[in-house]
Amino acid sequence: MKVLHTSDLHIGRSLLEESLLLDQEYILKQIIRVIKDEAVDVVMISGDIYDKSIPAADAVRLFNDFLVALSQCDCEVLIIRGNHDSADRLNFGSDLFDRLNIHIVTEYKGRITRFSKGNAEFYMLPFIKPFNLKDYLTEEEYASINSSNDMVKAVLRREHIDKNRVNILMMHRFVCKGDKYPETSESESMLNVGTLDPVDAGLLDAFDYVALGHIHKPQTIGRDTLRYSGTPMKYSFSEVNNHNGVVIYDTDTKKTEIIPLHPLREMRVIRDTYSNIMSMDNSKDLLRIELQDEPDVSTPLDELKKKFPNLLSLVPLTRRYQSRGMFAGRTEITARDSPETLFAEFFQLQTGREMNDREQAFLKGILDNMREELS
Image: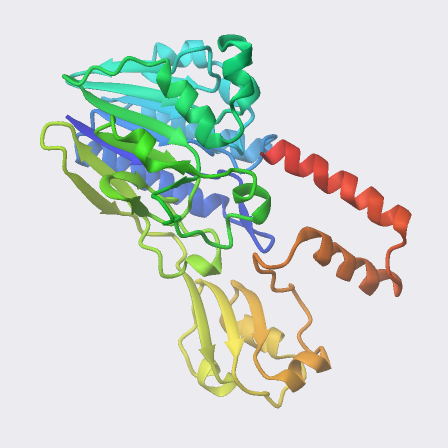
């Protein structure tokens, strides 16, 4: 039996204010083609269907179209909630979807939701927090949970795993193997990764395959059958070297295969001199350009965008140009920049003064609420 593993669709995401909705539609159609071409029996989507807990209308429409296409494939579809997803919104219509072989799990109700097909048993564990276990544990058991690792251990203790079956776990967590942490990227902001402390991979040894979501770079954790599928497309310039695709797991041979996916618009970083870049072929790729010299033009961004309409980030690498402020346009932001720092810089740029104590406290309250919603 063939099982497809993907995750972190992040439908509705943008990159430096550039909508990626058409790019996502293109990738989702490729996934449908892979399902049909490979005669996939079960599709697993391990969380973060949407990019926001309250998705925009066009994101909802795209996911609706994807569900319709999935319902027309000869397979079962298993979907769990990620930390970006609203449980109520993702769960909407799930009882009806069950009749179309689309099974969505957004809540934990004392036991991991299971789905059986062929020789495999699928364990669908959505993104949860310790308080989701409170009604199912004794006071002593609940008081002993001090981390995500404790929480997952408590959840798995309640399960009886039949070793005569091929057991597959779907989970949306930050999983490490000893002191080896998964590789992250800029598109996983500190707001998101920082709220998920690690779960040790050793807890998951009873499962033949673990279909993880949450980390955007495709990678394995400790063994070939414990892996992050990664995002089906790139979501930041730190991911330009990622090889995006979907994973096919065969429950009979217990082997995995990567099926590559190809984007509508490639994402690239170009580091060169202005004259060399201007001599390159025109391109509609999503670009970040890092200039190694000081071009003798007043508006290099405008000139470059004539050749590269999807130039999203222009970064001067010479100190003198950085200080002259000649690069009007979007600001380059990295994972090292905290939201507090970025907003403080923006506030000072707009008002000509630093924030006072009252304004800093107000900003802190807003960011704390956002962090709580995303965690």
